[in-house]
Image (cartoon, rainbow over all chains, first blue to last red; front, side, top):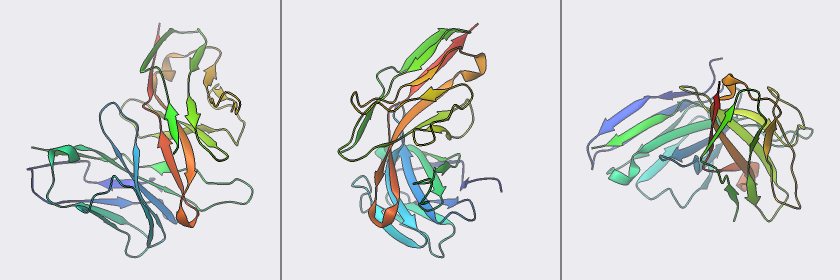
Length: 118
Length: 112
């Protein structure tokens, strides 16, 4: 297993265009997370899936953003009508579920998709 | 609300010197803390978590609930320790997931 895989690595687009990113988690991981990281900041939580169910969304996720995980495996994050402020690194992470002995399992991150809005 | 503060953007030490990367947190529940590291041109990866109480690559971190701190320490810095270090706090989400709240990171530079 190569770990969490994200595509594309870079995306450059004009303001107002729609973009879609893909994340393939580690195969046995049922939890999947999206984060956004801007320059000089740590990653910020966007949304969380357990299997195919989207269970939590941050207030950072405006109605222009939508995320799906249709079969509980890969996930997509779509941004409609992109704005300059959407320029950031979009990170995906996955993990196993809670373990009685170990508690919350650590999240494993992908390389991210860097979005640049012209 | 949960918050993580890393006061130093950059920490520069000489090889062989002790290292301490500071992390303070704010959380109303029982905290679960992590240190993640990002080496140049690599992805973010878990370094250690407080629940494990183990030493990884010579690094240790002790959770101090009284001071709400989780500082990362290493007695003797190595050149390969140069990287960006993020402290993160885990918070519960609906359905049992855990949201990580990250600090702004500290860039550690180990000089020869």
